[in-house]
Image 1 (cartoon, rainbow over the protein chains, first blue to last red):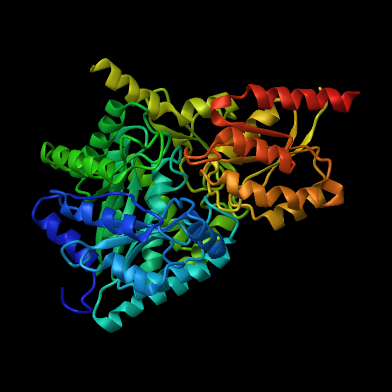
Image 2 (spheres, rainbow over the protein chains, first blue to last red):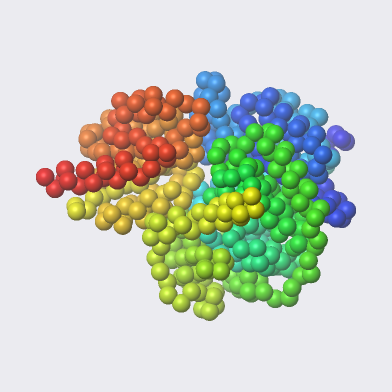
Length: 420
Length: 140
């Protein structure tokens, strides 16, 4: 690795995509440096085309660095790597010889105040992370949207400073994963795009756009195609790719069901021309995965990718129409994408179902239709055509919510059982 | 059945929402008024909101595996406040990462001031019974 050349995350994914392959990526984070390093090295050594992941713990995510420190001192387990709390030299030692242009590493965090995390990761020699002013704010905490936009603007500026050492920073949107489940795809596509535009407005030249697998493959394929069409139109001159997340909601309990769902995410990615997949493991429903379980998931995903062909892109689809309407309505509001996002949520032009954040209007609703597709039950003030809304808005009961939340789990555990 | 004013909340590090939405719907179906404070609730802010809202019941739901630890710092804050010293406070969810002695941790939390500690394996029964017995108590 050339000193200072950095990860070149976007270039790596583009290179793999040109060779007709899919990049697979785990979700992985350990509190202790030795474990984190072992995890990265194990993924690197696996015979798959992968990138590495360093996920920070939830104390660091919300800025409770004292709590992370105490947990380390008392030998208590953390659910990720406290990159701000460990010394810069420790972080560099974890990554030394592990990360490079042949194995880029992305830092995953989930913070609406990510400046300290971004500073720590760039100091550690990294240049790739993910998130966004909406997706890491509304679902997860109580930071105001306006403050989150300011924090993310600063974070983009901090991240682009790695260019001073010759690296090209890369930022991925989390907007395509809002709430993990039950958010209709058009809104996911619109948010993912708007966050990518926000990043580019603040200096990024290499981005990826996320989309998380939902309840229906056909609808998901429409969504990823919509995302690629809109990115092609709106991200001219930017290096970009689409990353598909394996289902982020309540996961199948059985080993067979978990693997089938992962394979379906890979199929979605390959058929629609996405370049990267974030995997889930067989232990997802039960506990944090081991390193071996992560490597297994990467191998299963890699193998599945080889059995699928890219499908022809269909023309206009209903997800594209809805997503385009949302994106255009928001971009019409203000020149500055961050300001446009704030105004759009204030006026309810963007309104995330089931999201409790005070800056979300909470006037939209969604459900799983009998055909398995996600539908709007109400759209509030969002510019979504009325025919897209189910005839009679109904409020979900607690039991109905549980049934919806576990739809994918039941479907895939059932499929696994049926196939023996 | 008496209608309780319930504050629904979680711990500072817990970003999960679906458990809170489920409990909000459930408590509403049981006839209670719910103020859902949303994910990632710092204890100091919870204390302030509880003093404003003077709830009949505080429900803490945590599923990120750090609940046992965070609950220990949360409860003294509420119990040391005169208006909240007697307010029933329950906690439930996935409170540990699976390595803890759950019975001992739960006993410790009860001793520290929680009125009920339930883990997800207990099902809804203990929580439902607790809320129902509270309503009867309020009626008397």
